[in-house]
Image 1: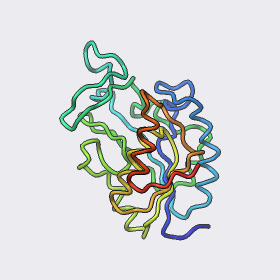
Image 2: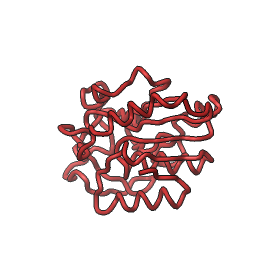
Image 3: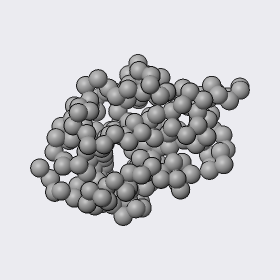
Length: 202
């Protein structure tokens, strides 16, 4: 067992991000056994869950004439318009059936506000509105974070960078992540994480 000041965070290991899902990440389900093994090794374990209302602003279907993966300007900056995914209560929003959800101390749902997306486990995409995860981790005495999940270049990246900005020591386990890699987004994400002091352990 690792030190009591270390938490493991598994990001969005949900059906819609796995093969066959609405926003499938190639080979996404391969992270499940890696993450199950990692969860067993850490004293504090958190799962995040994308949890969107059906009318969510970030869904291309909710903007007339918009194509999935197109970019729009939101009040908080550029926003990708995604295929409809991880709708609250749907099978797509459910965790992958083989994920050891019973091991988690906390399940944090994000992206539930219709007007703003939430890639990060710590803040909405305005980078101001907190999810409450920082307070939970501080109250548990956590100073170090280990992360894995889906997708490397979006929710893992933003979670890791925000955690580093908040002063946590952050390690991302490459074997436990898979990427969308849209227009070079994976390389950009890796560089962003490294620039903020995140350790990427491949």
